[in-house]
Length: 88
Image (tube, one colour):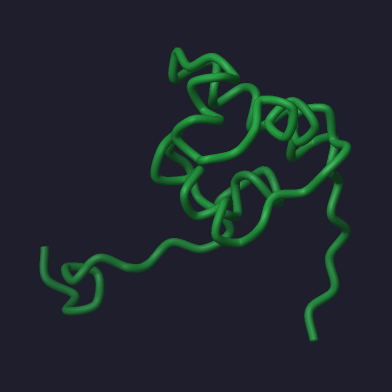
C-alpha cells in the first residue's frame, strides 16, 4: 500500500496553471470535461478533487500526467525502445 498526502490546493493550482497556459477559460474546460463551471472552480480552489476519469481526460486536454497534477512532478517515465535495447 502506497500512502501519499493529497494536497487539494496544490492540485487545484496545477489545474489552473495548465488551463491558463492552454488558453482555456473555466467555462471552456468545463464544457470539454462535461462538468459545471462551479465544479472547475471548486477543483481549482482546492475544495474538491477530480475523479480518475476526469483526471485522465484533463491530461488529454491540458497535457501533463496524473503524477504532475497529483504530486507536482513526473516520477517515472517509460524507457524508450532505444534505451531498452542499449543501441544508440
